[in-house]
Image 1 (cartoon, rainbow, N blue to C red):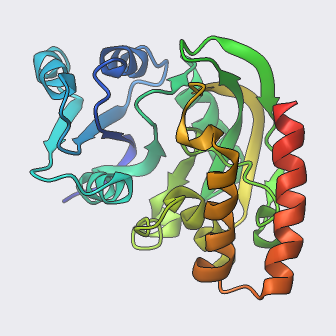
Image 2 (image 1 turned 90 degrees about the horizontal axis):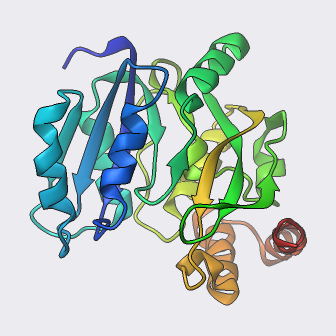
Length: 253
């Protein structure tokens, strides 16, 4: 497959996202940067999401649907999208999150200015209707591995990667909980620096009962990443977990 140099491939794992998927597609189509392909990977949804996607495919040739025959989870769905992507640039978007119209244009310009391989933006927490709550997570100017371990400031729907610089193998996501965070750490551990654009270009929709709002589960997931994925000692894991918890609590106040 020939990789197109200015094309942004947007990877969206879709599982029972029928409530949001038409809005998500319309949002991508309204981007001011128009050289993109939208790869929707349906992970064997049980709702009407796939039917809604199929009804929109004829309206825009930039939209692609990959329908998986069995449910394999978000990591494999994203990896399927990465493997099918024709663009040099990879952007991740979760089906229930919201991009502002100039998200791609602003972020790609920032990436080129920095000559970076890995960039991300600030984002605002939204309610179940994606209305902004005023709680914002600001992207630091730069993030390296050691600093990243004590803060989960990189949100998946804000990330843009230049695969000409990273390659595609390293951005394949592991099949574990918090696979996205594990992937960012893998990139940083390999020597890449993540550059943050401190502009709110994404709304993180957070229903009250979402998995990410379960504090105990979040602690378990981050602890397992320290111990099993990164192989950190008990002492180092506890050190990073303390500062992670402080920052996670602060940004929700």
